[in-house]
Length: 340
Image 1 (spheres, one colour):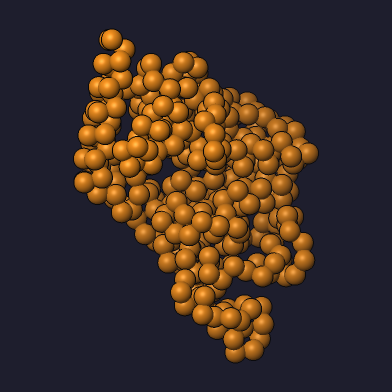
Image 2: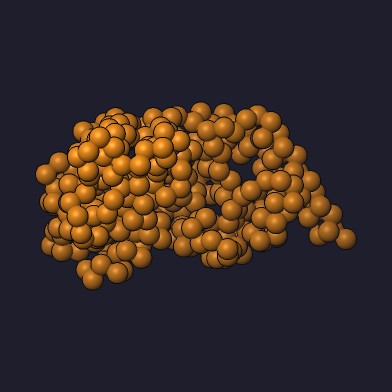
């Protein structure tokens, strides 16, 4: 990223400075492409996952949209704003989509099915390959918001068989404001942003070279957090861990402790020097009801206590020790107050 900051050229220019910028951009695109097993022209750089999701849902050549009930708000809101009919796929109590319900929904005009690879609140991994199998039987396209998976679980565009895939750098330890939409070769999209011919005319505007360089630098980084996450889960005695009966990301735990609300927990952990979130971090500055837990049928008095803990590529055993000690302190203090 520092090298990109020193490069003052526009990657669309043909002079020496422009060619230097183009080389940096091409290198970043190749790294992102290699991370998910595609050729570089299939990678469209965006300002983040939300823009990529909007481009997929609004730009795909379909007549209607089918989205899971637990998608990120940037998918749900983009679907509503698309002007197309929208249906929501229900999920079970474990947070996994109902494939039988999806199969019934697929009958009709050509659709785009949008199912995330892994949920941003619970970490529950979705059966995307099976979604693709069903969709292809009905001529539907498939989009997978894979923002949460990159750097944590294998993410391969071809093996999943999807037509569109959303990625974001900061979930893999890269810079915020750097994302990408991976587009199947030959699939035409209507751009969201019109103007110049950047990104093969799929996203106008001078590329953010610094952000793209940072994305490329972390695209193939793999965080090994499974053992740390399992240890954290084991220490949460008395808590409800959402999605515990399903396959989850190795870095995510969403839990609630009956009788404690999320805002209290969030502030208590913050005072202990630990940053956690309630639901999606994209609902910035507020503790809001989780549409994900509601779709899973979680009672309001339990979902209102839900906290999400995420581990990163640099999380250590010492961090887990600190979290466990803080959790026991917070829990014991709550028990003492309840007994008083």
